[in-house]
Length: 302
Image 1 (tube, helix red, strand yellow):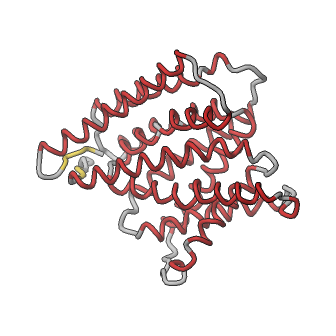
Image 2 (cartoon, rainbow, N blue to C red):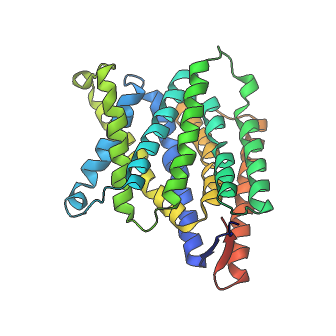
């Protein structure tokens, strides 16, 4: 008979985890719109850039870090790279809105994984996720999107969503490794998966204009260095299923930032969806805080 695992989390740990979630929202919010803004570059190329820029920035530490090659690290790298290509390809093929909706459903898999491992997820996180997901649907209004349905976009999004849930599970179970080590392995995954595209995608580095070069570097810093750090902060200090639900709150940030970058406005109904999604995130955050005050260490089932 499986025993439930009780994860004890101190109050400062929760604050750090929530800080990582907020950083994740900002980095994802700016990165996803840039995928379409940088339309001259294939999704595979952007994935390679995500890993390459991160490696360059972390190079001084890479030279001093002893990277252990293990099955978990390899799976961490591959799952992150495959999840990223699913996100980028889905966004490029059928747009960010449907891709975001599909990716926002990844906590369902995380909850199923937790149940499979014999861990109980409380009603508050599940209720918060349902409310959050409804808010995302109201906000994105998929029924109002015009254009053809792209099966390949749906398949890429589903594939990426599945790999994202797998990645989050592995990340949540590898907190004994240093954040730098895990960031480097995730970068290797991006380079490996994106680099394979050289076999079928024309690499047009030479024609990149000056402003595109800086945009590519900015994309690499946001989606690579800062986003990878936010992942480790969130999943090191929060239960995996709860962190996954809170991570889905990146959807409102993405839409707000996208509309700001593209100089468009949200309707009243869409703002209502944003408010509903943010209310669910605030409720779940408050629930975590109350749990922390109940005992010396939070008894959160994950």
